[in-house]
Image (tube, rainbow, N blue to C red):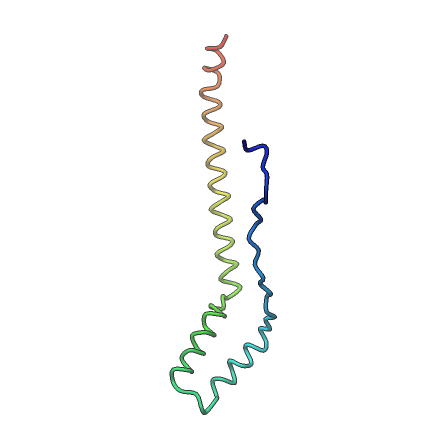
Amino acid sequence: MGLFQFGKRIKNRQFDYTPRYYDPEKEELEQRLGRYNQNSTDVDLTKVRIKGGLRKKYRVNNEYSQTIRNRSNRILLFTIVILLLITFYFISEYLPRIMASFE
């Protein structure tokens, strides 16, 4: 029954979403100007500060990120070497026994 279908086929759902243009420089300028706006209340200033903090997240020192990356690479290399040594040990120890059992 599934091979032959008569009538209308179900179409995929389509969305009419048009993305807005985002200018990060303009957003940062508006944020800086919003801090010094005299008409804004404490709530508005708090919202602007939180919004800016979430957008920027945090600035990471490049030396620190490089140190973390190097540490991660060393741990990965150490793990690979250890696994290769364990594999070599098992192959050298047990492979002759396995091959002898098949003969």
